[in-house]
Amino acid sequence: MTDAQQKSEAAEPPGLAWPPLVRGTLLKRYKRFLADVALEDGTTVTAHCPNTGSMKDCCEPGQPVFLSVHDNPKRKLKYTWELIQMPDSLVGVNTLMPNRLVKHAVQTGQVADLSGYAQMKPEVRMGNNSRVDLLLKDEKRGTCHVEIKNCTMVRDGLARFPDAVTSRGLKHIHELTDQLGPGRRSVMFYFIQRMDAHAFQPADDIDPAYGRALREAVARGLEVLAYDVHIDLKEIRLNRRLPCRL
Image (tube, rainbow, N blue to C red; front, side, top):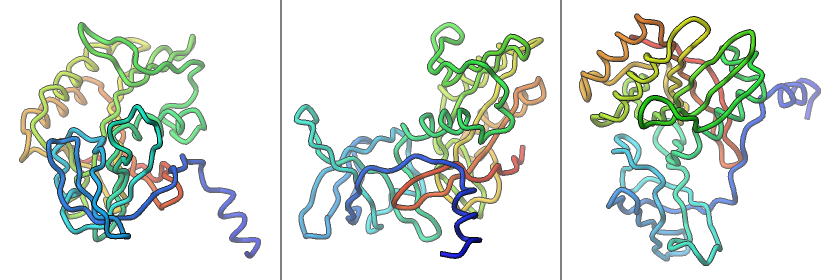
């Protein structure tokens, strides 16, 4: 390895490592939480699908997938579906990953817009019956409520959210907007869990009410951040901030 390659690798931001993964082929996803997968040894297994969304554009039968393996006897399913290989990118399907990785990235100074806060608390109550993903606090800077949305749908190079009508997502926009005030920021963070997008845009054709509410909230001071990731079979890490087309 050359000195330049060593310096380049040293400069890469820290990410989160995947557990050991096994390869298979997706046969079908069903009942939201289940996926049948043919492993390379010829056996067929049922894996837990940790994603309640529609998974448009990232659950096509016949595509290569990668599963983590768990030996916990209390688990009903030994395998968890983590990644799918789409034509232009690996795509992470585990919706637990965005909160974990964004929290890690903020702690390690990878998100400039969310730096400079003394405290960070996850899952803090917000509004009447919700919890915000991250609450950043600082005596001088005030507070910053951060809601993280997993985005896996990309069409024509645009990452788009939501992939189905979401009353819950609409509620989060209103609740974030209600938190705004002097010394009180609110941020909607779109976590694009794939590598083939060049910009983010709300999916108005799928949920026009969501797109309208998001633009109205931005006009009132809600901030929007969109980041893609770098994924390989070893780790996932935050990559680039993408422009938002609102």
